[in-house]
Length: 188
Image (cartoon, rainbow, N blue to C red; front, top):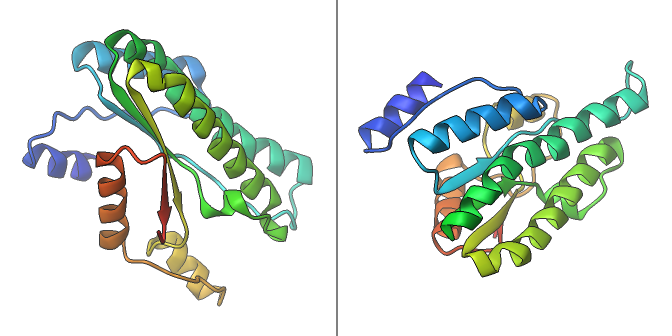
């Protein structure tokens, strides 16, 4: 985190880092509000997610509960603390990382697909609710982007259609956020 923070600082950003579990609602709220009090936030990006195959050694119910706790409740815990501040200031932007998986049910990762579908629908509704307050809400729906995860997927000989490098993907995301797009799809 410090390496990324230093890179951002070199580009002129004010950066504060911290390690907080997105499932810890009170801890995350305290962190977000502390940072906002010191340096009013203008963009909050909720980017946490886990997946898991429905087949395997762990009980199905346990996997589903954990996936929804991180992917859905983690988004609520990240976004909700800043909403009233953005509404008061009549300014701000929220970006939530969903997935193209939210549009389709992939049999082995049904809970992941469902959780990302929930995030997509939440963000679309939130955008309408916050528009009168000049608060933008964008849901980012990436497909396969070249990361350690996709490298692992390659090693398992699984398909990664429309694989995109991180520079191109980040350019699409930045452009979409600057335009206050409601949905950013990768690939577009």
